[in-house]
Image (cartoon, rainbow, N blue to C red; front, side, top):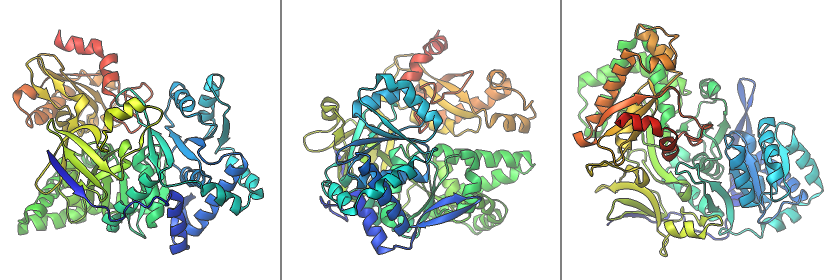
Amino acid sequence: MLVSTAEPIFPTDPSLTTVDLLKNRAKATPQLPLFAVPKGTAWQDMTAEDFKAKVVALAKGLHAAGIGYGDRVGIISKVRFEWTLIDFAVWWSGAILVPLYETNSPAQILGILNQTEITHIFAENSSQWAKLDEVSADLEADLRIWRLDTDDLSKLVELGKKVSENDLEAEHAKVQGSDLATIIFTSGSTGVQRGVELTHSNLVDTSRNAAAAMPEIVGEGSSTLLFVTLAHVFARFISVVAVHSGIRVGHQPDTTKLLLSLETFRPSFILAVPRVFEKVFNSAASRAESSGRGSIFQAAAKTAIQYSKSLDSGNASLILKAKHGLFDKLVYSKLRKLLGNRAQYAISGSAPLGKDLAHFYRGMGVQILEGYGLTETTAPITVNRTGHLKIGTVGTVLPGNAIRIDADGEIKIKGQSVMRGYFNNTDATKQVLDEDGWFSTGDYGSIDADGYLSIVGRKKDLIITAGGKNVAPAILEDPIRAHPLVSQIVVVGDNRPFVAAMITLDAEMLPAWLENSGLDPKMGVLEAKDNPAVLAVLQEAVDAANSNVSQAESIRKFVVLPGDFTVEAGHLTPKLSIKRQAILQDWSKTIEAIYS
């Protein structure tokens, strides 16, 4: 059994809550910009002192509306400034915030509302209100809906003017670090949504220790633009550590405006899932190809990867350095400008990042620091650090936590970041949390001699072929998914004679690829899925992935599906991870046809 432990820089203080993080920040640097809100094409800063004042005013309104200690308040909204404002106001009122994904179906919303007995909920717009209205007849408790698009926040602030700060503080004084701060429902990749109980201490300890371990990234004066949903623990943690550390935060829910926002906001670090980094690379390559500079871009990409690898080995030749300097002027500088021309770092999580892609970004001047964590661990448990980056791993354990690899290869976690349990589900909690506090992640991994963790794949996803060969799908799926034509891929083969795959095409990238390949750019997915040129290039991607595994583990056959997996169809989680079991069930006839 391998164990890696990092002692906390900040031990747990049972008296501290998330509200104390805001109070301390406003006291230490009252005039430091803590948020920036869009104003035309520019951004208007909001100081820590101003943010605290807005939080208090809204918290008074919540108190006046009857919300107090231990009450559960919902929110269903895209990422935006008001999300975090509501988050801290709910905490200041002594209540617990329960986020719902804006993509949740009415049935999912009904289940969460009834399970948590939410009495008040913030809805972003008429679309979310309509879903709430649809389930209203089946709710077990009365529900008060506050809409963001009809300025209900201002109404609450007005209502709260009759509440004194002493009354508000008396309510919050009841809250201790061990009390619940939030219940976050897992995104359902396993098919079952469970409410993860995270305490104030979970958020406070994780934020303080992560900030102390990574001051050059999440330190005072840093900045980031959030476009990942705040309903997910990944962005939620960043929003809390930002208040603690003094990070200037902007929000952009519309990904079609993301590049413009990055250019004007100029973040010092970026938070994203691997699919975003793949899209940026593939789009840049496609534009270069369309403009006749495809060979230059490919040469620049190859050089960036070689240069990054040379940083690890310390043997960059003079020729490589010269080529890197040339491409920095021709290509890399333009790509950095797309990201705002200030970002030196990016944090990636939620799924594995391809090694070559990580080397490419480091070679062009942006270090992607891959990390690992789950909702049940308040997001990050391990992360790569600047100056101690080991590409292909998810880094070393953060202070205050420990990881171990059991005999069967499963990763287990213990420490300040681990959840209290699953809401109203003692049996499920006992299945994953033992008496000593070790949490069973359900992931396979390994720890090297330097303490760096590598992820093999999900335990539940392991495929055992009819010949008895164990296959971890991720090692095949991840490199194929990085191909510009591929949107999603699901490897199959459990109890089957060989491994196969179902692939979906990226409809956004398809027209440019077709045009660059001398084919009709108006060709749709239905026609393209059977096109010999498309199938040939997909076979090349499959062959490249197969080179990483033995013959018994390799993909022998693949089919291209007529459409894509979507959140709405129940095949993807809101963070765009595949719901494997749902896909296997809904596409069972296709799978049977592969093996018939």
